[in-house]
Image 1 (cartoon, one colour):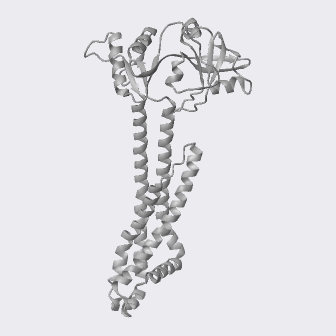
Image 2 (image 1 turned 135 degrees about the horizontal axis):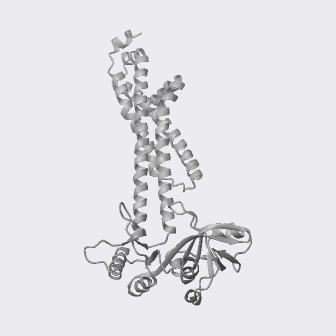
Image 3 (image 1 turned 120 degrees about the horizontal axis):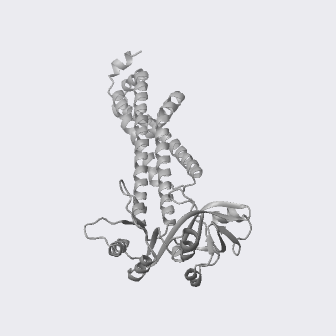
Length: 401
């Protein structure tokens, strides 16, 4: 019995192929939009999390000054080497404390030059950033203490200055300083903030202070907590120690800020997840529009086939059978639209994620939900026209022209 009903539904759809296609187009657009938006959103969330992980694991960033309206970090005094010493001596549960003094300078090799962010630091920076060397070596303790003119360069600097020529052992000019390249950093790519992390030159902090900056300021400090250690506790210890060292009295606002990388990553992930949900909800509205289209066309179909309905009722068809016929027709339309929408949505998502260089994260549950929702739309919006058809008076239906 159900097979015959399904067969009649397919025949009715094929009789008005163009109208049926235009009707299910709303479902196709709705399902494909939901799947594409959610898939792209999930891929973006994964990419953001991966980019954040490149900044280091369990890392806290310390900057002088407070950020926000009316708060200028430039008004706060920078850190110095004694702050680094105290943090290393007094903090517990940390892997490394890395000082960072930064300045953009011109780096030259032969006829090639570029403006590069140059950092004065030590080997602790590589630990806090989970950064390995592909070739060469780290700074020697003697080089750090004496301020020898050596440097480690990023992949972008190597590619632009040296091309296919080996860089380790060569000398480059950093500002006015001739510096030996002793190591090459592994490629990190673009950060979550859109900057090229490989466009970098590292040199010993003392070398940077004496030969590049001309002062002993430290612009920022990176602290990497050990695995399993609560970064909130480390952050509290840092704030307590720095308040004491910088002479900040109780009740007075800090003139520095400690940012927890884990909190930043969680916030970014939560924001992208919320955005994905909003995009999916907006796309889901088109499914409702498609459902209204199905209801509209089914009402038209009932009007056009009133005489046919009257004949079926007159020869003994039950109201439930007529209702089922039109309901199945609406559901079939929705399911056809769902199948096409799922295929189109995945194809669009794959194309966009490839173009945007983000992961294609296929979530089977979203596909099932979108497909199931399309079937539900067919049932809900097809029921009322089907019920109207089933309740027609056979005598009046037979008189209908």
